[in-house]
Image 1 (cartoon, rainbow, N blue to C red):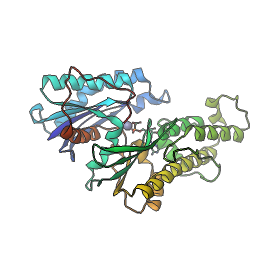
Image 2 (cartoon, rainbow, N blue to C red; image 1 turned 30 degrees about the vertical axis):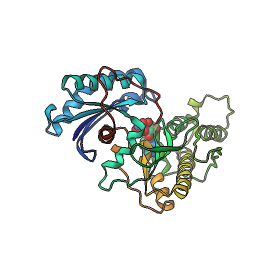
Image 3 (cartoon, helix red, strand yellow; image 1 turned 90 degrees about the vertical axis):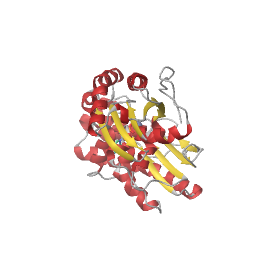
Image 4 (cartoon, rainbow, N blue to C red; image 1 turned 30 degrees about the horizontal axis):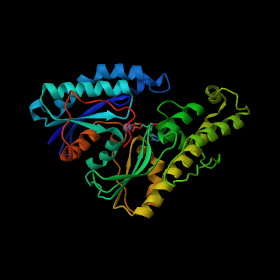
Length: 342
Ligand code: KG4
Ligand code: ZN
C-alpha cells in the first residue's frame, strides 16, 4: 500500500510516499527557516502564504522522484493538527481536493503521534510496549504505547515545551533561530557547570515544566551582565561575550536534557518497555542521545535528523497503521484541529 503523506502544520511544507508504513519511496521537505529567520520565529501569516506557494510543486516533485503517477497511490494521509491554523488549512485543503479529484481514501493524522512513526521507518522497528519521549517545539510528553492504538500519556509539559525553551533561550543569549540547533552548537564550546540552573519538581514525576528553567536562565544572564530585572531582555545579548554565550548555552542544555533523561530513565525502570524511542525535533540533540546511551540499558535507534524534525514520511507511515483500524474521512467533512491533544 503506497500512501502519500502531506505535512504543513508549521514552517515545513512536506510530502512523501511510503510503502506499507515501512519504506520511503520519496521524501520532500521545503523548509521556510530562511524566511522566518529574520523575524526570530515563525510568523503564522507568512507560513500559510509560503505553504500555498510550495505545496503543489512539493507534491509534484515527490511523485516524480518516486516515478509514480496518481494511479499508483492508494491513499492520502494529511496532518489534521496540532499546529498553526492557517498552515494546517493549506495542507488539508490540498489533500481533500486531491482525494476527491483522484478518488483516494483520506486519513487525518495527529502530528505529534506521527513523530513516533519516524521510528517505524528504521531498518529495526521498535517492539511494543514502546516508551516514547516526544520532544518538539510544541510538545514534551512521555507516552507508553501498548500497541498502535492503545497508549497511555505518563506525563506532559505543564507550560513551555522543551524545544520552545531552547528557542526562547537562544533569543535571550543572542543565538539565531531555530534555537535548538544553535544552542546545541554553542554548547559544544561551553562549560555546562558554569551556571547552576534549577530542575522543576512536579507532583506527577513524569510531567515537565521548562518555563522556570528559562526564567532562571534569564535572571542568571541579567546578574552576569550587571542589570536588574527591568532591563529589556532583547538587549541582554549585546552585553554577552562569545564565551559567556557558550557557557549559558551549555548550562541550559545540560539541565534541560538531564531533566528529559531523568524522567525517561524513571519510566523505563517502572514500565520495563521492550523499546525506547525518541520523537520530535529535539530528538536531533546529540547531548540527549549521549546521556540516554549512558543511562538506558537497551540500545536506542535514532531516525536521521530530517525524520526527527517535521516531515511527511512520518505522516504517511502513521497513515498506513491508522488505515488498518479506521475508515477514511470524507474530503467534505475533514476539519483542522489546531490544538488537539493525543
Ligand atoms: O518536531 P519539530 O520539527 O517541530 C514541531 O513539531 O515543533 O521540532 C522543532 C523544535 C524546535 O523547537 C527546535 O529548536 C528543536 O526542535 N530542535 C532542537 C534541535 N534541533 C531542533 N532542539 C535541541 N537540539 C537540537 N539539535
Ligand atoms: Zn513536529
